[in-house]
Image (cartoon, rainbow, N blue to C red):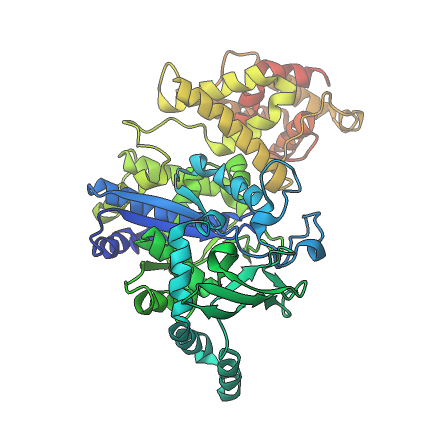
Length: 554
């Protein structure tokens, strides 16, 4: 465990957040999260889902009823499309995501497609929220009632908006904003003629705002800025949507949300979360949920953005690394600190997590206070319950090399040698089905990591035969050294230390510089001057195979 990791874990947040949630003394604790499905939902949002999941787990452990909820904001209007989307923005801008077709044809809407891409990864990351669709929420009598409450309290909401939105304006900007709010209503209508909720793109957006609400007759008047259609209709006959800062607290209210984590963009002081809490108090007459702010997750030093196409999605993480490792990052770090994940460093990070795991099982030492924190955090990194004993795992760095040898050795030999390594490292005679499955998954992830993020040094290519240009460089001294190495390799099952020492000894015996000796062997094996640590690499390839390879050039 690095000093930085130790420091991060020592500043912990789980107990403090859970205690704040417990103060609500609810019959059932609802921990919510939400996201607009404007495109692929990046892995940074998984931090919010994991925070919610951990709060729920801790509450359940204390004997409380608790559940998590994922609210898909598919009723939001299209403002832009990621570059990868083939749909034309001019055809769909201003139309709710739930009404835009899925270009791939596999889901009922554009919004459903991108939400489902995330939802499908929930089991792998150990989260199980109830999925709630905003487009469906607005069809319920409870939400219709909440909309009426907001329309009837328009004056109060205007005051709140002026206070919160306009607090950072200068005098001129504030006055202009106050004027714009005089006839403002907190809801817009989906045009029954053209299906738009608003018109225009960023900087020129014009919502189909309600222009008049008649509470006695429950009528709303509106004008569509996309097609020009105007009408006055019963509230029950229109599809209506509250503006974002009002929509959020309305959903909190009807879903009885106890707690909701939120990224720094929403949770900043005076931002949309604080606006929602004030609307909760003054319009819905309750406190609103416990606010849990968190910093963003970055990938390789960059902020992720769906609209900008800077996206690293959860299913990609699951292809290259264990989801438990991602949960570990999210849990060990204080919520006020940003997390920067560097995919190219994954092998070291996996090693770090597995040392952390060994501390939990008492296989590595740690001081008392730190060990207590490990006992709290480690079970929460897992998808299921901790096993009775530390699960045997194939070292990821070993898997990186071994996974690339399948083409030369074959699938079964790669699996068999991986099994032998685990049994030797953990001093066991047989492997469970679970460990066998782990080996396959680890080899697949390691190979995929190399493809996507490995450096030139990480990539191993073993040619079918030693190229002629390499054979031509071998001197008589090189060949004498190689003959002696073949004799060494004929011996039965040498351990790595013996093999490594033999290379030095045989080089000295023929007067070959040690550096040259290693270079000659690497060039014969992988046509490079250097590579993975030699003795373990020979064991991966197999002594017989390496002896035959060397003999082929003599």
